[in-house]
Image (cartoon, rainbow, N blue to C red; front, side, top):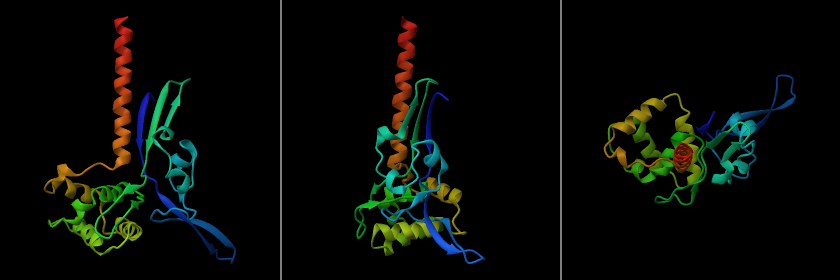
Amino acid sequence: MGTTLIVTDLDAEEIIREPDKNGKIREISRACFTKRGVGQKTGNTSLGTWHPQKKAIDDLLPLDHDELYYHDNDRHFGVYIAYQQAIECNYNALKGEFLARTFEDALIASNIEYFASYSGDSKTISNVAKIIAKTVSNEELGSELFTLVNSKNFAKSEFALDILLTQNSQNIELPKYIASGLRWLDETLKGTLEAINISIAK
């Protein structure tokens, strides 16, 4: 495997208890927007069973840079797993941390002013701007964006293309979790190349 960066999603889920057809109470997982302190789990099996082997959202959110890295000395490979973590999101009534679930809401929260001020022709991005304008908290923003991104009318590919074609799209910043992962990959590969060059020089 060598050096590998994995960019994935937090995929928060809540546990719902409901009766089955026989009246017996069962637990099922249902996708939801991300919240702390309410017993949410990740629906991403890579995070839960492989690395960092944590399923609770409250355990995944606080992990720092070093805890996202896994190195196997015996098999000579290193892996960094990047997923959504808390984003500082301040715009008008929106204050404090925003908890993203997927790339789309992380991108929006990381560029809140850009999306809020959008006035172009993209219906998808215009819908995002309308949501930002009417929400009064980051928790409400998370709920509204979750509903939008998971609606039948939201096409992720169209959303991405519309962003690329908007004016000043070069000013859009990567979500921090992706930027941190790419920085790790760059630094790791540079270190590997330097080690190879030193070995050749010897």
